[in-house]
Length: 589
Ligand code: ADP
Ligand code: ZN
Image 1: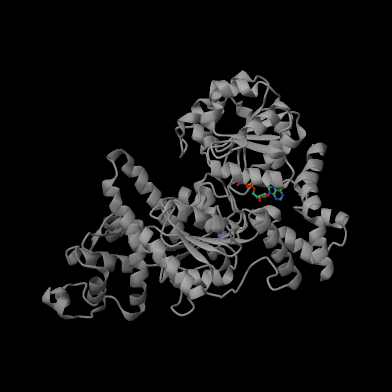
Image 2: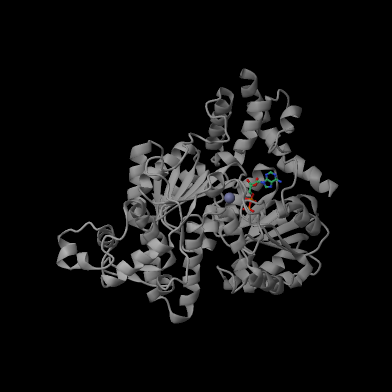
């Protein structure tokens, strides 16, 4: 491991391994096959790139997406690692193949459909292989969320190179999928290394949606860096993107399947290269994007499941700097999701319902959001994380059992066909023509809710809709569902989270919580230099240096190459390529 630490410093410029990295690297260097389950941002690529620079021979990386491969390729090359890919998008096949045969490649990327071909096996046998790395390894399992039959064909390739260790990597695999990957790829059971799911640098916030654009605008005020906003439909994507661009003056672009492919690709490329762009997208966006400096992910409506939420929010803060995940929900989102249950095949319906219930739990909890998320993935986290909305400002919980009984019984007595507005009038005794025409002013529930309780009616109705206790009908009415009967009979208690006061909705206001010293002249000059170098090399700025590296430079102000080499993220290759230029800017200040 001494050699590994030396390479970590020299090649990558990092001081220390993170989390499960040393365990994985140690096994791989010992030549033992391994399955590493590590969350997004945990640094999976380093666990094969580093051994690739130390072990004799080439590390063959099997990866399902060309975009992802090329992203990795750029990053590896920027660190001076000899890397190439054999995909339909590459034109330098001949050189790559020659380099491989000559033993002059550290990393060779290839797609599974190519890797499983017999000719490819033959080609590989011409030189020494250090390691097989199988990225997105959950694709090999039918239990995984993204099964790809091509992955099933990899086994003969792996088996024909006896003694070459295998490293399977994935960010998402439940216990069943893990067991399946081990078996499919022939990795011993003791080769399983599972890192925790926690992403401590992401701050989770869940709020009721009052006005998505205004709420996201506020978030953008706090986070000047790149962000992703997920919306559920193309129309919403377009509208939110337009509104945000107009109101904030920041670069904002839309991304959805309805856009011309060239426009879509251009918008994605612009986002990847940008230091302050916000992209508003449907969930089609994100697969295969490895941008480490995304500072926030906002959901303008509820995601599909907790798994989807974790994966989508996981795109924030991969560089380890503070980032935010903000979900905006409405009772209507849940009503729609529950209505769609009707269209789901019978066998899958119960499972889908459980997914929605789990989301409702996350939205409605007064306890730590992170704890709810981690428990969902089978972990046993501490009660409080200190970095979610509920931990930062504990909301009160109110016992609304009596009020819930009044509300449900008003829904029942009015015939389960009226919307919330009408029910509210009945309960508070605000008779209008419609109420009196229906004779609802003569019901026993008329006027039974006093002024104090009245302000809780709407939050309660939302909570009950999220839980499926109240169900929206097609015509905008409400009917009873789920636990409504048990609540009416007095068998269930109903607690809701204290609604925030009307005026200071978001609580304390935070401007620019960026970790970067924005406005600091040296930091800005370093960023400007990075921008120029990136444009010249046609690379995203983060491939040159991460923000954290520039930050350290601005704080420490190294004056020599030796001092610069001490800074995190400055490896030998980058020192050679950019060192003097950055030192010159630092000296000027
Ligand atoms: P994953 O593939 O697991 O989502 P990546 O391999 O993309 O994660 O790594 C995420 C980020 O963390 C990258 O920008 C990488 O440079 C950085 N990183 C990885 N390992 C370390 C480390 N030991 N120290 C500091 N930064 C690291
Ligand atoms: Zn918390």
